[in-house]
Amino acid sequence: MKLTTTLFVLLSAAVLEAGGDAVVRAGIHASSVMVRTLLFMAGGLILFSYGWVVNAPPWDFGRLLGVYVVFFFLVAQIISWLAFAQRPGGAVWVGGVFIIIGGCVISLA
Image (cartoon, rainbow, N blue to C red; front, side, top):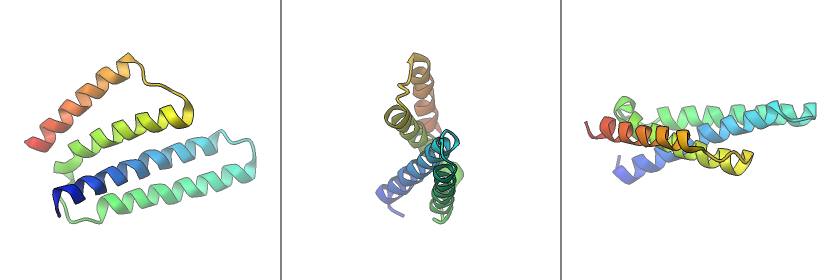
């Protein structure tokens, strides 16, 4: 698999995982039972899609985990900010720098 394809698949998986989590979170806080049920079902489908996307390719996922964790961190922060109006604070960004450094170490080793 080409590097660009691999990165696109990992980014897609991160969007699906963080997005699915956000949909489930929205379901937990929904006021209507019908809306809650629909959001839980949609979240489950999205999270299943994440599991399929990340496990279908024939790759050494352990080696790519560093890149994936970086993508997940960045996507989760963006979704948290846009969907829930929760801007990341200083400690999150400091921790994020360590995540990015760790992802580089794992990926380049």
